[in-house]
Image 1 (cartoon, rainbow, N blue to C red):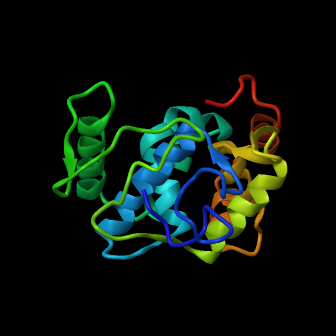
Image 2 (tube, helix red, strand yellow; image 1 turned 60 degrees about the horizontal axis):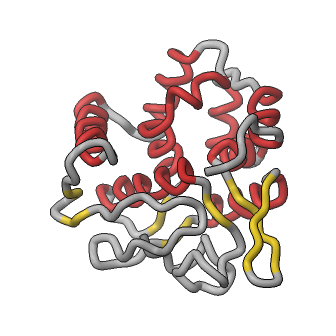
Length: 205
């Protein structure tokens, strides 16, 4: 996956020595799916809705525990991410066909490289082009850096390991954004989300 800027401070696309953060496996997988959603919009900028949609597709069983009424939250999430029934069915089918326990398929004719663990090497360029993170998404990642409970060593530096829960919490807490207001209106349990983000039961993968 290649980004012009957003995951690194200096524009480098490698998630290695120059990176300001590591991504947990679930968040990395969500970003890879977000690239697909962005590409389907004929855009080169990954928006918050793209990442939320990817997190929803990939990990709703985990996310839904933060809502007292997951079904209503799911309706809002699909609307925010513009998942019409046909589009939703298409993405679920395509995602299921590209899971690691299924034979390797292709998205839009381009092979998907294996998923990386936190700190793994860049698997390459998608669709022959690179992608940029929106200002709002970059801001959420920077905020997530500050609350990430685990760190990793890169040379002489210590960098945060950012999870999906951390990013979701920072998105919701950005009360100036329309996305945050919509998520708050769903009755999301901020206390439970903050506990999961700041005090996870297990070390990150």
